[in-house]
Image (cartoon, rainbow, N blue to C red):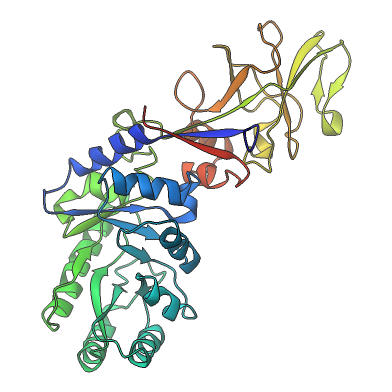
Length: 370
């Protein structure tokens, strides 16, 4: 029996296609990190990570928080994992689970060294974050001499990778700034590499950076939203990663002059309407602003609009003139002719990341290789 009426069909072959597209920009020796934070952008982190591992599509995995990395380990994932937003309270657990943290400031660096020393360890890996202009987290250029001094004194720890993050690689008007970040990262990372014995992995490029600045691929790139079908260069080169669908649960004939839904915002002022109710709402990730005709869902090859407000667990569409019956499947987003998650993002004035990560846990994820 399905866990939920609503299903997110995850197309593993499409995700593989997208990752291979980004690999086409890389030298054979360059590694690829697949970013699976936020439940793999809503696509199911454990299941997707196991699939990536099985298909040998990724060399590394990236998550945000300690709980995400530990969940992958408990789920049987063996690929190397970087925890990008670790805080400082979970270092011991991260080390025990071989999910090594990003270290972005001196306080965290000293504490990490203390934890490693208490465990009697040496050369404990971590990932060293540099600030090259994003100004979010990371060591700045003036910190490098003291940073090197600490690294040389604390043999309990060692940077397995050194990285930074591009602020605007997807926007051509900022290309000079992006190149300045590349240049600064080159300079800062060289200083560090010249001062330590073990050569770390260097990585800077994200998805748009890989497409637009592949000359700066260093040793590894990090592919996040690109894996999930969003390109900064040519959307036609990527495939839709998933399809959100649910069945019609009821069809009503609503007479002329009546209203539909909360607030009576759905109106039959131009004649009687046939209304289909769907068991999906804003608690599942269908944003409330997609109601009142702002969005269209695919029903038997046609695209009827929403009507009335999106409810917490249900929404309604106007299927007047469309042959349909309860149980027929409706595609909320997916491949053409349905609207895509990118289309939803345009309607909502946001980005596809938010659409995918808004998919609730109760939405059943189903994985397909074709």
